[in-house]
Structures are given as C-alpha cells and as structure tokens.
Image 1: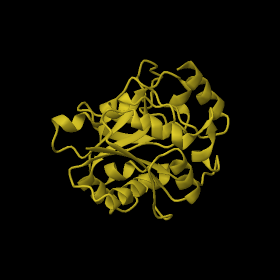
Image 2: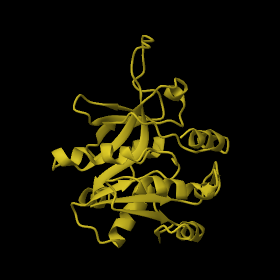
Image 3: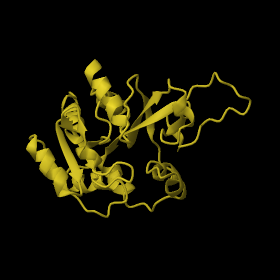
Image 4: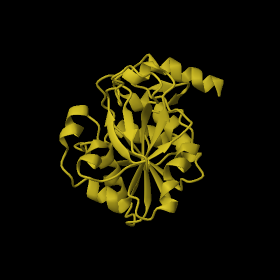
Length: 244
C-alpha cells in the first residue's frame, strides 16, 4: 500500500492562500489531489493542512483532508503527523507530494517508489529533472542537486551546483522536484532530528537527512513539474493545462 500525503499550508509570504488559488476553474489543491489519484501506485490520497479553509475546500470536491499542528517545522513533519493518525506500519511507503505543482505527471509517483522494490534497506527517495531552461540553473527558486555514481544525493542547493570553474557549459544540471517517498520507520526517525545547519541556511528540509548521515536515492524523471510560487506563475500553468 502506498499512501500519498499532500502537506498544504495556507500561509505563504509570496502568495497568500496559495492552495486555494484558482487554476483554470479549480482550486490548486484540487488539481494536485486529482493528479495524485491518477497514479496506479497510490491507494489513498490525503491533504494534511493547518487551516480549516483548506479542509472545507478539499471536502467540497470529495477529497480527504486532516488537520495537523500549526507549529510543524516543515512539510515533512506535517506528513509524519498524518502517518501517525493513520496508524501506518513501519514498512509502509509514504509519498510526500508538493501542493504547489498542479500539473505533475502521475507516472512520476511510480518512478519515485520504484527503487524500494529492489532495495529492502532503502529509506527514502526523491525526484529530479534534467534542467533544460538555462535560467533555472542560477535561479535560487529552483533547487539544484548533485548525486554520486550510485544515484544517492550529495547535496541540494539554491545555488548553481556543480559550479563550472572553467566555464564548462557541457555539464548537466538537475532540478529537485520536491517529491519524496519514505518508509514510515524512517520518517519517524527523521522528524526527531534537530534542524540542520545547512537546512536552516538554505531553507531546504531534505538537507536534514544528509547532515545526519542518511541517504536519499535520486530518481531522474523525464517529466518536469513546474511549481506556482508567484501570481504570474498561474497563467503559465494554465497554459500548460490547455495544451494537455
């Protein structure tokens, strides 16, 4: 059984009430929820939120939402609280889906959890996309990732990594899409760890995993998943929906 949990916080410094913004006639949280439901791998989808307005919106379109604490450090902590509410077993696979990426391809969830079938010791995986838009290489809004020869993450950063000292433009750069899969037992461990130094500086929760010596398996997907951060992103996403 694979449970998809969408952490959804109402407050946003750049776009207030982001989960409820209208995307081509539907609240964004509904768009994300419906994409998750299209995945053959997902048996249940739940929105984990800190706001009754989001609960109301999800219930209005027939979705399932739960109220979590408003003092969660990150989306990961919100996902962990929800997994506890569901009394999931230690080996259950939990997928953390970004609530601001309403046009993600459902096939990416199958890709994300695929490494667990071949590695019983694997604790966590995440998705990355080979950057095609050069602007994203240096834009701090787009998180970059480097990984080792075995496909495990070395570092995530808002900066350009690796940095081409000799201006080598042939290097490939990868964007982190922010989707995670974990075993419940590892998720329980993860949320007991203190906020890491690099996590605090870069404001990237996945760095907590690396700073405490754990591994994240990187899955390269051919499907990009643009996010909505600013009001001007909405028209771009709506254009993609019209093309599909």
